[in-house]
Amino acid sequence: MRAQTLAQMTPAEVKRRIPHRHPILLIDRVLDLEPGRHLTALKAVTCGEPWYEAVPDGADDTAYDYPTGLVIESWCQAASLLLTADEPSSGADGALMLFGGMSGVRLPRPVRPGDVMRHRVRLSRSFGDTVMYEGESTVDGEAVLEVDQIVIALRKPAHRQQADPGRTAPTPEGSHQ
Image (cartoon, rainbow, N blue to C red):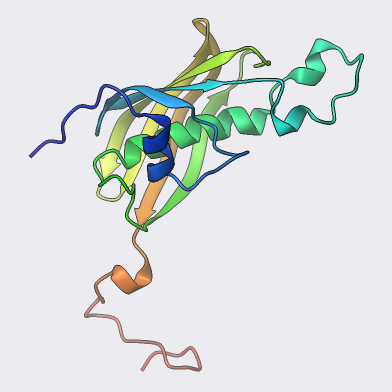
């Protein structure tokens, strides 16, 4: 049975699905979500964010460029919400999300306070518990981030995985029986 399309995801639902909290929770809300297909999320950038505390009075506008790593992290959080969209409200149910890598990442222009980033994430391929996404982020329709590909793997905790019958358990010394 296919999961129902969700029109939106509230901030409370975002917090139930990913472990990030202030100041590194970088998604404000989800506007559009079709599990297994695509997601659109928003992140509003403000002068009150902790990354701007050290900006001295009199600094020029470039001192307020949102950190590149946080633009990418915010988009990746949106991707993780798409990955967990088919899961119960607790997200990935204790599984680890492993980011395998990104390629084709471009940042055409800076993001600054007052900007609202619109992240778009699309599923491009899926291999069981490993997925590939692509997408972009825009501010007022202008690209601020382009991602050709990101690979994410979802791994259940070891105590929840079934044992591989072909593998023997390691001994305390680390060798196999």
